Image 1 (cartoon, helix red, strand yellow):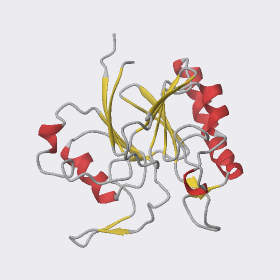
Image 2 (cartoon, helix red, strand yellow):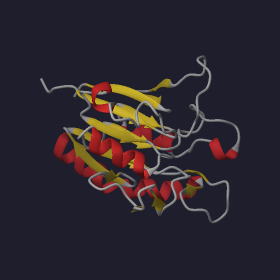
Image 3 (cartoon, one colour):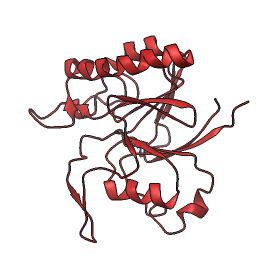
Image 4 (cartoon, one colour):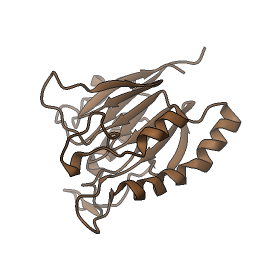
Length: 214
């Protein structure tokens, strides 16, 4: 039997107790880091170095570049990480695919999409997903996004409305998990885990630990 994969997923908020020198002691067994958007590049850069684990991420609607660090560096990406937007990847035997951004609430802004534009982004995933099915017998294990699907974990205002095309995507490709951010959680009674057919949808804000059993 394949070994479980310990995943640390994060989104939307820098946590001081994570962005700390003792993070390796706090999380000694992380196999894979997943960023679900709206996280500064310096934070992701720190995690990939401090935990010495592979990192995949998608950008959120606030993740504009370039970004500047306190020590004078200019960051446009995370060295050694995979920007998963409109891509598929395999890490520790886990099949991953990702899509960035939020619903478009400002005309012409980057990292925002309307539902039709998001369908175009989804289409970019199809060759990789079909290859996965031919090689591995399944399309996808974990779908990584910034925004949630429409009607699941989303909010009524346009900026926080989920994407409608995510729903047929989940029905067709049936990942075991969908991890998203974007929706900030402040109350204990707001659901963060929802079952949609065979897919467990998780709002990872601001941090979620998942043990993936292949």
